[in-house]
Amino acid sequence: MPGSHGSTLNGMMMPTRCAGTPAVETRHPYAPFPIMPQQGLLSSHRRPPRGSLGGVRAMFSQQPQDLVVVAGQPVTLPCSIPGYHGVVLWIKDGLALGVGRDLSGYPRYSVVGDHSSGEHHLRIQRVELMDDAVFECQAIQAAMRSRPARLTVLALFIRTNGCKCKNDEEENQDEEPDELCVQEQRVERDAERPNYLPHF
Image (cartoon, rainbow, N blue to C red; front, side, top):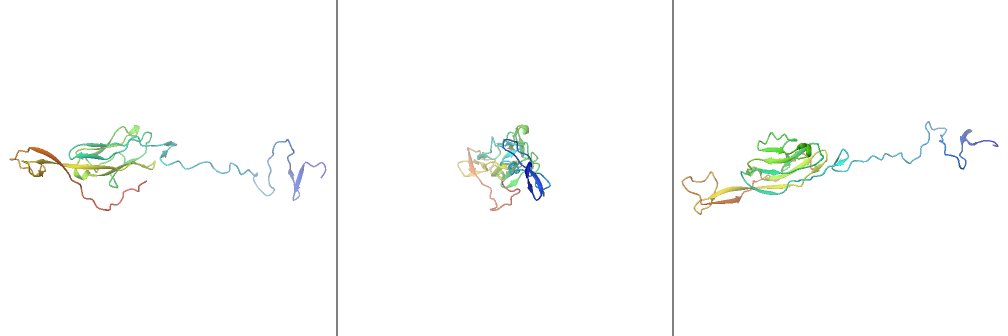
């Protein structure tokens, strides 16, 4: 139509854009809202990467390592996660020792270190043969687990008069020991044990 400034659609006037003029918003006659471009409709939010917490990626600066100790000696298994302030679990042969620093079920065990700095070291007083196990440090909120560390406990025996090694209970007090020897004893374990928590 001469003199018109737009086109018609089903009898309705639709605005048009001439060359050199800015784009104007268009509305479909049957659409209650303006037609928006496809670009920008999808959210850019993504799932945080594994090991991240609050936008900061947590990483182990110290992890437990395989150790061989003599029964009766203390031992410390290190675990440091700087910047992590969530729950940390110590796992022994697939079973959790406790939650956080509460290891009330294991009187000889304690979690030591500066908690605010991410230190969660496992301290074992007077290691016994039952402590011969595989230990792990797990950060629950960050879904992280340390490398498994094997703690091997050796029993201390006393050799008397060149005979076989005897432990302290078998030692005859009338005999004077002439040499100390160390023998390895391992604790028999069940082939299968249920896991207290799923592994990450």
